[in-house]
Image (cartoon, rainbow, N blue to C red):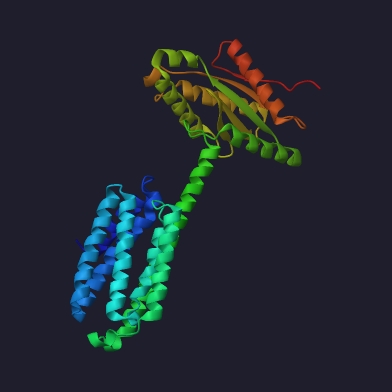
Length: 360
């Protein structure tokens, strides 16, 4: 396989793994495995060239340990994989520094080791703090007690480049850990926002979000003298669907209705699950007659839906529509829409009813 194709495949595989919700919180470990394998393969070649036999065998063992960590990671044994990687980083850094001295910079790998263990969610905060502190303490001890002894291995003018390469590699590893933590945090923040603002069954906005949105619509309408309407809709005979076909089918029907309505609404409109089988639509910049036409179109689309008919033979919707009046509260506006929905039900269902403003 050409190098370009191999690299493209590796990037796609890594991206797919990172974007997997089950593994995203362990993205630091995934990145660490890739970086560790690349690094120790390079170091293995370096020590073979330098004929430092003890470090050749150490790096062979290191590559085996990183492959083992990757294996345990794929099996979901995240804590075990983390401890294997951490132990390898500590042992390799200490042994290489004791053999070659501090002049080649192998002691700096203790910093990514500390970052790895602290950022890893599989390790408790207490143990992570202790292990991270041990890494920094060992680094300080090596820096204070060892001297440069690597010249006996014939590095000559290459010693500076090895030191620079180690420092850069450690810096990149630290940066990747920090970026990974940031990716995880941003994802979790988006997930929390979605949980707080969306209905888990239909994926629609929830009642809380709709309430806040309508307050913004009201403020804009009062300031700009603009119009907006709300439409409260209900699935006709929904209890019968649950009783005859089961609640699972009832849930699927609600999901199909939500998808059908979302596909037909304008980008400026907002659809939310208001409660049970009731949905609420906020139509910004819309007057009553226009709202009636829009809702009647939605009613027809749901009644003709080819996705719903195989589930339960089809469903119909009843709508109550109300237009905002200056000075009116949103609670009063929704009550008027609910009154219109009640009248639509009483008049035979499968229709849209406009509820007139309440007289002063």
